[in-house]
Length: 349
Image 1 (cartoon, rainbow, N blue to C red):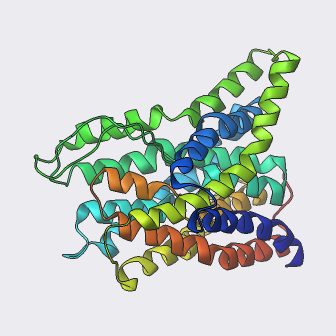
Image 2 (cartoon, rainbow, N blue to C red):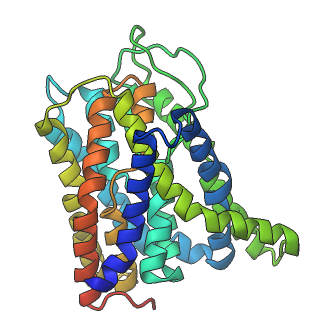
């Protein structure tokens, strides 16, 4: 366990530093979008570009990995909506609750943490989960929310989240969007996110046998090296800001169970489906299953609360789910990592 904590403790400590810096005014609230933009448009794309250079497409889009992670994501969305939807939690809020239950913070947190914990070979499966969550999970949940809300599109915004560039804001007076229209709008937002394109660019450069000029590659390396600490610090600041922007007081019973679904059910579901896939003879290694399980055990994506606010959902509830999952994940993620590593499933094939 000590070896696990040596890796996980600094990551969560940096999140706490960002939270405290924003809370105490050492980091101005107006500066948080700038930090978020730096990570989303410069540092993290360079980090993912480097992984794209050094990871094959077959590894990054492994059919065996997809066969585990996609059904797990869909089950989490359906189950969370089924368990939480009520008069107090209408469909729009249930859909965003399902998004934070099924969408781990793999972009800002998962890639650097799992690579530090398991080595560079962990990048391929983690990036595969990012693509699934960007293009499928978040688009599906936004479509469900948009197709079941009474809101009018009030205009374009440029707010960025871990999973989307928010393209439209939903108000409160128009008819629900058609499911197909809502899904297309959500998918368009996912495709405007720079992260998938940075991965594709790295794959393309490697596939064509090209290389960047030395000075340009140095810039890419410098920005990529900045991704992990700045992203973690930004998560903490974003969590504080989300709490300040939460416009409702949410009872514990409406957010803590969803955080527990994220931290306990999601990795259990991934591990169970992965074990079944292995038993059926699919080429899913123990290492890949470990990476997928730990990715699912990460806390919820930190900026989904801003996305919920833009779509007129209960961002207070979403913010509290994210906060609870992030606080509790230090113990739950570290314990699960220790158990998986003790089981000897950490060596890449």
